[in-house]
Length: 139
Image 1 (cartoon, rainbow, N blue to C red):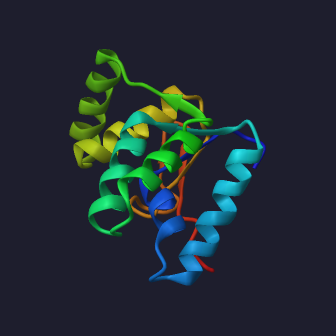
Image 2 (image 1 turned 90 degrees about the vertical axis):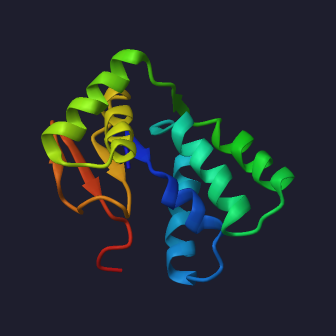
């Protein structure tokens, strides 16, 4: 994983989800690689969604999740601008994506990433040089 890559929310969530040990292990390995290298990116949207899901769906204490957000914020964190929102709207319109998925794709593109690790998008699909990779495919 030497090329810049982007981590979607579900990777962070599965790292703490004990209901699927296989996905938890894969996510933890990916995040370990992300935290020890310099090529991993995520966005404020990813961090926000992670906090919400980890507290509401996984039932983790807010203080613990806050600490994880602090740890993950050591990665390259993308903060969208109005131009990024407009570009996400264009992706939404052109590719029939949800707006939130389009915003993740735009964040990955604007961060210079070649790979977006996500379970939520079509594995192998490309958006202007950005490849969607489901890290749980074929494992």
